[in-house]
Length: 582
Image (cartoon, rainbow, N blue to C red; front, side, top):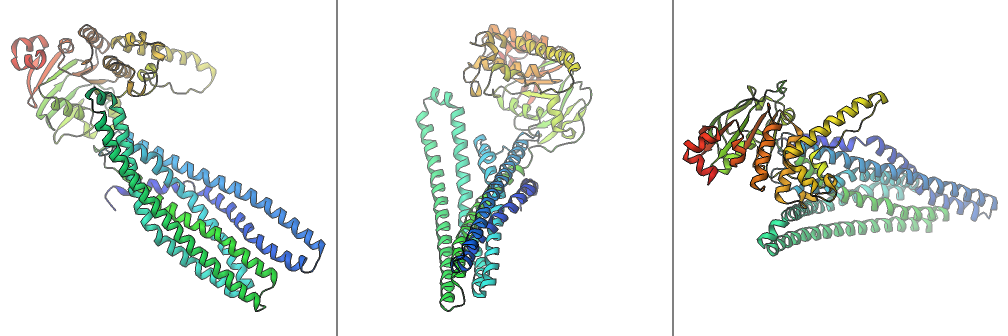
C-alpha cells in the first residue's frame, strides 16, 4: 500500500459500512424472499403428493391458498428489500461524492495535481456510483447464499446425494467465478481510466473553444479528441469482451451444475428413492438455483468493477497535499502585514519583501514567472523551496490553511466565472435562515449591509456598467465560464467578486489587461477608495494601477530591483520604465 493511501481506503470503508443497517434490512427481507422462492417448488411437490395423487380437493384448495399467501409475501419482501438495497447504494455513492468534493476543495490542495477537471468529475460520478453499487451487490450475494442454503437443506432432507452436490458444488462454482472476474477487474480499471481521460480532454477542449476557433485549430482539436475517444472505446470494448466471457463461462458452468442435479434426481426417482412430488420439487429447486447462481456471476462482475473504481477513488482521496497544513489560528484581528524572507521558488530567487499593513502596494515584474510564483506563495498553493512567507509575523506554514484562505484572498487574472447570473457570480448565495420572527429586523439589516457591499464592489470594479448593458441586468446569465461576456467584462466581474469578499488582505493579479485605458483609470481609483485602510497587493505592470499605489516594488530577475512610488521609479529607474511603459 502506498504512503497516504490508507485514509482514502478508510473513507471508502466508512461509505460502505455507513449503510450497513439499511443493507442489513434489505438482506433480511431478501432472505425472506429467497426462502419463499425456494419453498414454492417444495410446496408444489407437496401438492402433487398430498392433493393431486390422493385426489383430495380440500387439500388442493388449502395448499393453493398457502401458495397465494406465499406469492404476496414474495412480492412485498422483494420490493422492500430491493428498495433498501438501492437506497443504500445511492447514499453510499452520495457520501463518496461529498468526500471527493471535500478533498478537491481542501485548502491544502493536491487532489487536482496531474488530473484534468473532467477526470475528477468522472471519478466523483461514475467511479463513486460503482463503489456505491457494492452495497447492492453484497446484499444480493447474501440473498443468493440464503436461497442456495435453503435449497441445499431441503435436498439433504429429501436426498443426501442431491444435498451434497449443492453443498460441495456451490463453493467450487464461486471460486471459479472469482478467478474468471480477475481479467474483468483489470480491464474495468483501464476502461475507467480511459473514459476519465476522454472526459477530461473533452472538458478541456470545450473550455478553450473560443481560443481554438481564434487560432483556427479546430481540426487539430477534433483529431486529438478522436484519438482519445478511440482509445477509450477500445478499452470499453475490451472490458465488455471480458465481461461477456466471464458471464458466458459462469452461465455454462451453472447450466452444467443444474443439469447434474436434475440427472441425479431423475435417477433417484427411477430407483424409487424419490416420490413424484419430490422429483418435481428437486427439479424445481434445480431451476430455482439458476437464479442465485446467476446472481453470484453478477455479484462477481460488480465487485470486480467496484474494486477497480475504489482504487481510483482512493487515489484522489489519498492524494498528497500540495502544502502541509498548520493548525495555528490566524491572528485576530488581522493587521495584514506580509513579509517574505529569502523566498526561492521558480522566478523568485531569494526575495526579501515587506508589504505594510493597511496600504495599497503595487508589484511590477520583468518576468511573468516571478508573478505566478509569488501569487502561489502568497495564496499558499505551494510553499517556497527555501525562505518563509509571514502574515503579521506568523509563518504561513504554521497557520490553518482554511483560516488563511479567509484572511488572504489571491484573485488570479484567469479565475473562472460560473454558469449562472452575473449577480450570483459576484455575491455568494445567502445562507438559508431559520428562527423566530423577531429576528426579521436583524435579518433585514444584514441583507441591507450585504446589498451595500455588493453595490460598492460592483461600482468600484465598474461591473455595474456591465450589468446595465445586459438584457436583464445583474440577473442575466453569463454562461459557462462567462462566455457570453467579453474579456474586459469578465475581468470587471471577477474583480467585483474579489472586492465583494472584502478579505483583510487582497492580492489581485492583472485585473484590467482587457479593459480600455479610461475604464482602467476609473477602476484604479475605485479599487484604491474601496480598499482604503486594508492591505491590498496589485501584481501588475499597468501604469494606471501602479500610479494609485502607496508604494511600488519592482521584481527584476527574481529579486527586488527597486522600490518607491510609481512617479519616482518612472523618473529614476530605466528597467522599471521598460517593464511598465514599453
